[in-house]
Amino acid sequence: MSEVSGNPGQMITDPAGVVIDGLHKSFGDVEVLKGIDMTVSPGQVVCLIGASGSGKSTLLRCVNRLEDPDAGRITVGQFEATHEDVNLDAMRRQIGMVFQQFNLFPHLSVLENCTITPRRVLKHSKDAAEEEALHHLELVGLKHLADRRPAQLSGGQQQRVAIARALTMQPSLMLFDEPTSALDPETVGEVLSIMRDLARAGMTMLVVTHEMGFAREVADRVVFLDNGLVVEEGPAHQVIGAPTQPRTQDFLRRVLNPLGE
Ligand SMILES: Nc1ncnc2c1ncn2[C@@H]1O[C@H](COP(=O)(O)OP(=O)(O)OP(=O)(O)O)[C@@H](O)[C@H]1O
Ligand SMILES: [Mg+2]
Image 1 (tube, helix red, strand yellow):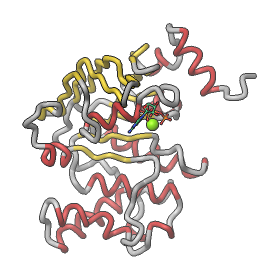
Image 2 (cartoon, helix red, strand yellow; image 1 turned 180 degrees about the horizontal axis):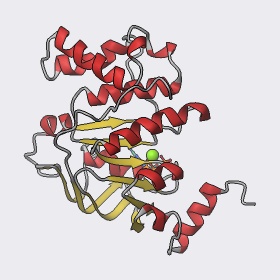
Image 3 (cartoon, helix red, strand yellow; image 1 turned 135 degrees about the horizontal axis):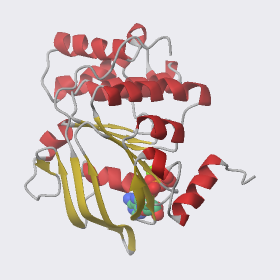
């Protein structure tokens, strides 16, 4: 954690809000999302929790239209994501996404991973893109590893590169899909602390996570999804600390005490 030298969110100027209204999504005959209503206000952090298969990733992927919803309306900032005429490229430029498996390009250096999209999509010059990338790598404490390949980094370091890479596009919204689930326990904290800094800097964040400590400390609201529906939502201390719905209580009991003792 001592490597982390700055606040990765210091560039945030214009966080976007997300409004999800009546979202339905099926795969074949299976309805995975059954009418989701949810709001993330600009600058808010919402943690999405729920059992495996409850539809968390599908919901996240609908927000940046990696999946096409069957019904419902989603807006991201000024973009109506579900409108047939939406400029998807422009909308996606505003949305950073961080996955469980990092998804770095293995054949590129850390620095190249962070410059390739600004150069190709934003048409930044090599020098400008490198300066920007090194700035973000410094903020996540990894400037000194800019020349390495991803395979030469720990999982936690790779995930910090993935966050820096997303930030080089100056997003207005960050989506995180279980960003620490694939990490060794000792590197989870370094990633969560960067996410906490980003939240404090005012980034809008929608985070799928099983890290209840993080959710309690950082989330403005926690949403519990079960079987494609929002079963319970509210402030973190309420949903995690004193859930009212039996399904939330049962889920949290299993997450917090996996051996059931
Ligand atoms: N592309 C797809 N084609 C068919 N079924 C899918 C597809 N993507 C997801 N599903 C199904 O939709 C359901 C919800 O999946 P999703 O990945 O959204 O769940 P999740 O809550 O993210 O689970 P996990 O915690 O395991 O990541 C699952 O039953 C899954 O098998
Ligand atoms: Mg998932």
